[in-house]
Length: 112
Image (tube, rainbow, N blue to C red; front, side, top):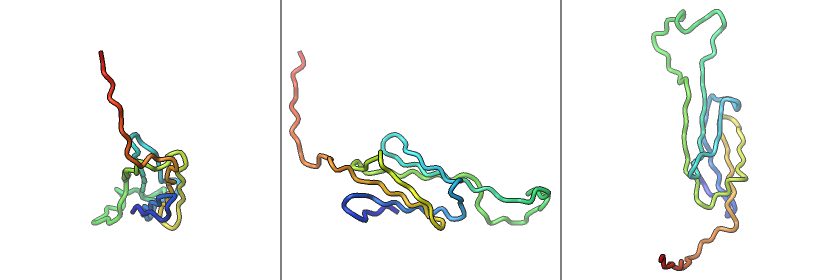
């Protein structure tokens, strides 16, 4: 969920239940895409393997999950901050202060 909580920054809340902070990777990709990757792997005793347990049905999600979020053009990518609390990744993206929001005429040059 992306929300604008103030005139100066965007806030993104990503639910990542069951993930530890060290299992979450946050990276900035080309074209203002923010990539969130999480890894979840089962925890077994060292003497027990998934094959030896012979599950009939296992209703837990394991593996890698990723999401990409397109950030607005006025996002200040140099000052992104993130924190993790109770299964939620909280991302703060400041807005640029010098964004040119007004119309501007562009002169067309002659090519000779």
